[in-house]
Image (cartoon, rainbow, N blue to C red; front, side, top):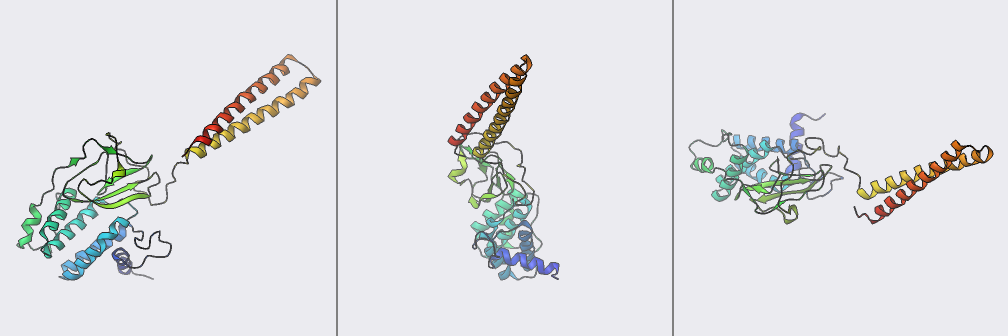
Length: 292
């Protein structure tokens, strides 16, 4: 039986680049969950606290290209925690430009959080990290977002209603479809949104999608329009056939026992079946012409 510590270590190994498990969609980017991401952050913190700086930096660098492999929307506090770790790692490498970029993201996502205790109070880089305040959010001019029906776009775990972000700052962009499957999951620099995500000016609804916060794969998407129309045409055809059959039976009875009531029933059912049949053929024709 595995221990919690062993489970945590397995999560870290998956995130930092161990071979993908059988059945993974992309061997180079195995499916990852938020709990695995969090386990990795904990291991990084423990390494820094133990002054194992090389191990911590190696884990941060290895995790960076794996984070877009998450199949869930990233919790903003987790990404803020990673941004602080990466900012400190870059400061130790004397890469102050990158340290400032990641510090800006950390401040933007969690402005009230302080730096971890393992960042020395009087370290020369401490002031640089603390002074790297997040820039103002800027919107892409004259553009809106384009997402599929039932889908949504998230930047750093926050729902987007228009293309806006802090410039000169790294971001994690995630875009899901109607089932919550992530169609886009990439690191983005500032306002460099993918062109395919940008559309005419406008603002999306601020309502979270139905799949948000639910386990991946538990939400079924809407059936294709073409299939729904074929199903409607079939239902109408069955109804028309049923009415016509009823009219035919009523006609046999009418021939044996003619009455005004039976005549009305036969005529009404025959006319109704013809009208519904015509509608069924029309819907069937529309379905054939439908591309989605």
